[in-house]
Image 1 (spheres, one colour):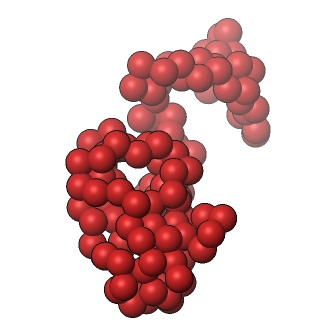
Image 2 (cartoon, rainbow, N blue to C red):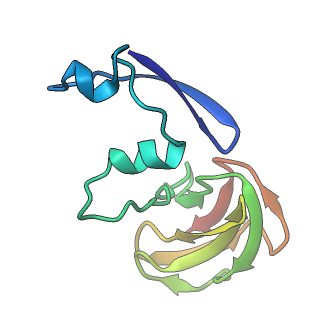
Length: 132
Protein backbone atom coordinates (compact mmCIF):
# COMPACT_ATOMS: atom_id res chain seq x y z
CA UNK A 1 0.00 0.00 0.00
CA UNK A 2 1.34 3.43 -0.88
CA UNK A 3 0.91 6.46 1.36
CA UNK A 4 1.77 10.10 0.82
CA UNK A 5 3.22 11.89 3.86
CA UNK A 6 3.92 15.62 3.90
CA UNK A 7 6.52 16.93 6.37
CA UNK A 8 7.20 20.67 6.51
CA UNK A 9 5.71 21.11 3.04
CA UNK A 10 7.75 18.32 1.42
CA UNK A 11 5.70 15.36 0.18
CA UNK A 12 7.10 11.83 0.49
CA UNK A 13 5.55 8.76 -1.11
CA UNK A 14 6.14 5.64 0.98
CA UNK A 15 5.28 1.97 0.69
CA UNK A 16 3.61 0.52 3.77
CA UNK A 17 3.02 -3.13 4.52
CA UNK A 18 0.37 -3.90 7.12
CA UNK A 19 1.24 -7.02 9.12
CA UNK A 20 -1.20 -9.02 11.24
CA UNK A 21 -4.04 -6.54 10.79
CA UNK A 22 -7.68 -7.49 10.51
CA UNK A 23 -9.74 -5.88 7.79
CA UNK A 24 -12.31 -4.51 10.31
CA UNK A 25 -9.61 -2.46 12.07
CA UNK A 26 -9.35 -0.24 9.00
CA UNK A 27 -13.02 -0.08 8.04
CA UNK A 28 -14.86 -1.66 5.15
CA UNK A 29 -12.40 -0.44 2.50
CA UNK A 30 -9.36 -1.79 4.29
CA UNK A 31 -7.75 1.67 4.12
CA UNK A 32 -5.63 2.95 6.97
CA UNK A 33 -7.12 5.83 8.95
CA UNK A 34 -5.59 9.22 8.12
CA UNK A 35 -2.90 10.42 10.46
CA UNK A 36 -0.63 13.42 10.60
CA UNK A 37 3.03 13.13 9.63
CA UNK A 38 3.96 13.55 13.31
CA UNK A 39 1.76 10.61 14.29
CA UNK A 40 3.18 8.51 11.44
CA UNK A 41 6.79 9.29 12.37
CA UNK A 42 6.25 8.74 16.09
CA UNK A 43 4.42 5.48 15.43
CA UNK A 44 7.59 4.04 13.89
CA UNK A 45 9.74 4.86 16.96
CA UNK A 46 9.76 2.67 20.07
CA UNK A 47 7.52 4.26 22.69
CA UNK A 48 10.10 3.82 25.46
CA UNK A 49 12.83 5.82 23.72
CA UNK A 50 12.61 9.43 22.57
CA UNK A 51 13.41 10.15 18.93
CA UNK A 52 16.61 12.16 18.61
CA UNK A 53 18.37 13.48 15.56
CA UNK A 54 22.10 13.07 15.44
CA UNK A 55 24.19 15.53 13.49
CA UNK A 56 26.46 14.03 10.84
CA UNK A 57 30.04 13.53 11.97
CA UNK A 58 32.49 15.76 10.10
CA UNK A 59 35.21 13.96 8.25
CA UNK A 60 38.85 14.69 7.69
CA UNK A 61 39.53 16.56 4.47
CA UNK A 62 42.09 15.51 1.91
CA UNK A 63 44.91 17.40 3.64
CA UNK A 64 44.27 16.38 7.25
CA UNK A 65 41.40 18.70 8.04
CA UNK A 66 37.71 18.92 8.81
CA UNK A 67 34.97 19.55 6.27
CA UNK A 68 31.46 20.83 6.85
CA UNK A 69 28.78 18.13 6.91
CA UNK A 70 26.11 20.75 6.07
CA UNK A 71 25.62 24.07 4.31
CA UNK A 72 25.01 26.98 6.64
CA UNK A 73 26.47 30.03 8.36
CA UNK A 74 29.43 29.99 10.73
CA UNK A 75 28.21 31.27 14.10
CA UNK A 76 31.36 30.80 16.16
CA UNK A 77 34.96 29.68 15.65
CA UNK A 78 36.33 27.99 18.78
CA UNK A 79 39.91 27.36 17.66
CA UNK A 80 42.78 29.16 15.98
CA UNK A 81 46.00 28.25 14.18
CA UNK A 82 48.50 26.67 16.55
CA UNK A 83 45.90 25.32 19.02
CA UNK A 84 46.25 21.75 20.24
CA UNK A 85 42.83 20.08 20.12
CA UNK A 86 41.51 16.82 21.53
CA UNK A 87 39.28 14.32 19.76
CA UNK A 88 35.66 15.45 20.01
CA UNK A 89 36.52 19.05 20.90
CA UNK A 90 34.23 21.70 19.37
CA UNK A 91 36.00 23.58 16.59
CA UNK A 92 33.25 25.52 14.81
CA UNK A 93 29.51 26.11 15.30
CA UNK A 94 27.42 26.27 12.12
CA UNK A 95 23.78 27.35 11.94
CA UNK A 96 21.57 25.67 9.35
CA UNK A 97 17.77 25.85 9.30
CA UNK A 98 17.69 27.63 12.69
CA UNK A 99 19.66 24.83 14.38
CA UNK A 100 23.26 25.04 15.59
CA UNK A 101 25.60 22.17 14.78
CA UNK A 102 28.93 21.74 16.53
CA UNK A 103 31.73 20.67 14.20
CA UNK A 104 34.14 18.62 16.28
CA UNK A 105 37.70 17.43 15.87
CA UNK A 106 37.84 13.86 14.49
CA UNK A 107 41.09 13.27 16.39
CA UNK A 108 43.74 14.90 18.52
CA UNK A 109 46.13 17.22 16.73
CA UNK A 110 47.35 20.75 16.13
CA UNK A 111 45.39 23.26 14.06
CA UNK A 112 47.39 24.47 11.06
CA UNK A 113 44.77 26.91 9.73
CA UNK A 114 41.15 27.92 10.20
CA UNK A 115 39.73 28.61 6.76
CA UNK A 116 36.45 30.30 7.77
CA UNK A 117 35.32 33.03 10.14
CA UNK A 118 32.17 33.98 12.03
CA UNK A 119 29.47 35.12 9.61
CA UNK A 120 30.86 33.19 6.64
CA UNK A 121 28.50 31.04 4.56
CA UNK A 122 29.78 27.52 4.01
CA UNK A 123 28.67 24.77 1.68
CA UNK A 124 28.50 21.05 2.33
CA UNK A 125 31.93 19.36 2.13
CA UNK A 126 33.78 22.70 2.27
CA UNK A 127 37.03 22.43 4.20
CA UNK A 128 36.86 24.40 7.45
CA UNK A 129 40.02 23.54 9.41
CA UNK A 130 43.43 22.15 8.41
CA UNK A 131 45.59 20.11 10.78
CA UNK A 132 49.40 19.87 10.82
